[in-house]
Image 1 (cartoon, one colour):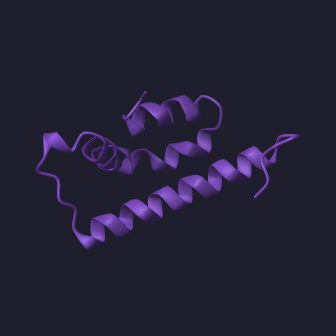
Image 2: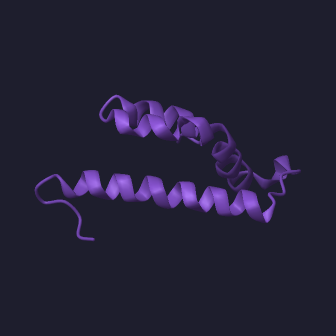
Length: 78
């Protein structure tokens, strides 16, 4: 399991350099992955703006991933 978004992006970039555009926000988004999975670490309470930013990031990444999957025969339906 990998909770480091920058690490996941690095793996994705090896296959598609368009994922580089997400690097600038990856460290901030990693906090969500870790704090929600391991809440006993405590102390992370995002603002409404941070939540919206994270959701926008996730939606944008999801759309890119879906567009890339659609390029392959036998891919998942929308």
